[in-house]
Length: 143
Image 1 (cartoon, one colour):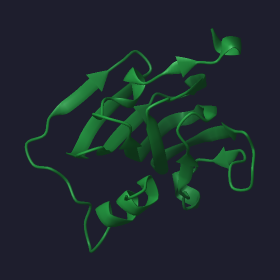
Image 2 (cartoon, rainbow, N blue to C red):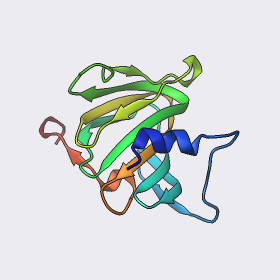
Image 3 (tube, rainbow, N blue to C red):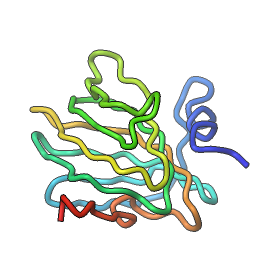
Image 4 (cartoon, one colour):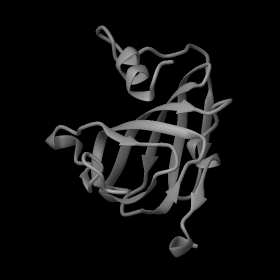
């Protein structure tokens, strides 16, 4: 079975991002905007825009494994537990953002920089994909 990382590589293959035409799935909240760009079975590509200075509280997704990359803006993100490769990440797109893997069930959170943050998320879902904010469990400390 294909992983979220393999899906990200496939979506970025060649000279363009593979998108589904006519798919219009967008959700606007008070602190962020989500746009679904592609869905195929249990896989999904979502664009997320987090407004300037917004802190995303510590939370986890129980149905979604994701690989994210910052396209514009900046911020910080932390993923727990901190095994190799899952430490605090600088999300500054100007510095050449790297892929950030957030495994299903991993606690994570962060803060957008002064211009906000725009991220592309390649996701593998357990079952039918949804907006990532629909699969949200807040940590006790964040409630």
